[in-house]
Length: 177
Image (cartoon, rainbow, N blue to C red):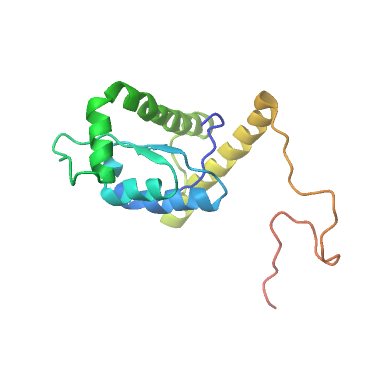
């Protein structure tokens, strides 16, 4: 939350729902080596599966309940979070309002790299947006190194195990001729 790193991105069609995208994004975040302690999200991500996913990873999802939500089965995760939301609202909102950091991140990307794309095809538009997030992450990693005193290590001082391999960050592959 301090660095505004974007840990996972998915780009779907304009009519795609938010809730089905939650699981792959959280799983990609964990697969990238991040520990999930809290996940603040808006009401669009409220579902039993999403709450249980975060709980299964050892974290807590702070998703506000909708007006028509029911308490659910007694002693279930849904029941506990529903009552936490309703009876400890101030404490819940302190965690939930960390979500504004995500909104700030989107604002940062739009301010630096504009809020439109120039590409014409769907694939090119997706790639352009992904490049914007990649560039954003490079900027905030560099900024975090300076402001937070984080020491960056891209690879160790030891030579590669196989002396014949290069130390490319991304291995270069030539097409077959």
